[in-house]
Structure formats: C-alpha cells, structure tokens
Length: 221
Image 1: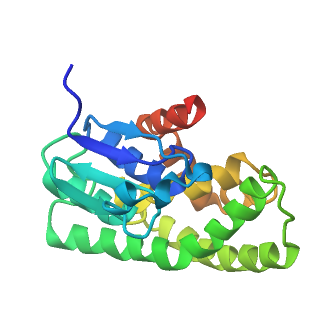
Image 2: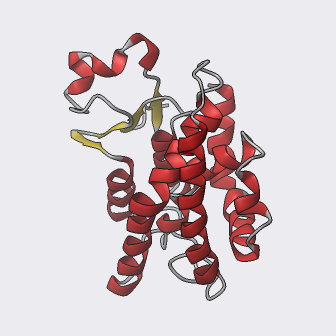
C-alpha cells in the first residue's frame, strides 16, 4: 500500500493535531501521522522548523505543500478535497462559508483562550506535576461561562453553530471540550447539564464516528 501523500506531524494527544485529524477523517483522506517527541525537543530541530517555523504542532505536508496552524490546515483540506467525504464540512456557497468562518473565529478568539488554559490547568498540569493556579482556573471558568451562554442561545436557534449541518465550526470545538468533559468533573457540567442546547450539541458532535476514531488514535498513542 502506497504511503499517503498527506502527512501530519505531532502527537495525537495535542488538541491542535487532533483538530486536523478529525477534519481528515471527516473528509475521508488517508494520512500518515508522524509522531513528534516534544519532551525531547524534536519540534525545535532544524528539519522540523523548515515546515513549522514556530516549532509547534501540527506541521502538515501534502505532496510538496507545507502548512501550519490547525484551522488553516482544515480549511485547505476542505477546499482541496471538496468532493471527498463530508462535502459540506466547509460549506457549499459563500454565505455558508462566511457563517462557518465567523464561528471558527469565535472559537479561536473567544472559546479557545479560556478552554486552552483550563485544559492545561485541569488535564495536563496534574500529569506533569505542576501546581494548579486556582485564580487562573476561576477566571477562565468565568470567561468560558459567558461564551457558552452565547452558544446556548445560538444553539437554541439552529442545530449546529453555523446552521443546521455539522461543519468545521463545530469540529474545531471538539479537542478542547473533549479534555474538559472527560478529564475533569469540575468543568464538564458547563457542557453537559447546565445548558440544554450546548449539552444536546456536545452529545451530537462528540459521538460522530470521525471523532471516535481520533479518540482511538489518542488512546493508542
């Protein structure tokens, strides 16, 4: 069997890497996941920096094309492989794409900052034997609650964030939320019980076959 031309560099446990993997599975694109041992500094070596100049993950290659930044990679995959897999993942007309983009921006600018902090403080700090910062946790919880109040209202108006079809806008929320719901009881209720529309949405997107496959990759890493 030929090696897939699409290569993703980084650990499946990374939230940004798993975002790209979920997109590739949704689009039914064969890929090769190439581990990067960040504890050994492999992401800072010259060869890696050629494809990811900031020394972060993921790095992405498709034939002779190199990209970084998970959301940009997902958009590229959807545009290049528009006729494969989930054809509507990034919309099929300008208005759909604009709606998806605005919620992707909301995820990146409003949702990601507090959830990334919480993922580190609640899921990773204990594993790394780093002391948790209660003040930072509380501040991030408050910020996240305000964002989810907006989401709950939106999800009372339509099935998914960008409309009535699952899209990149929803997919991009999967990695951070997965850690917050499964790794800690502290924040999980914000998604699973205190907001009925968010709860319904999370249950639906987190049980998609594509995300289940990514979770399996994380477990087998």
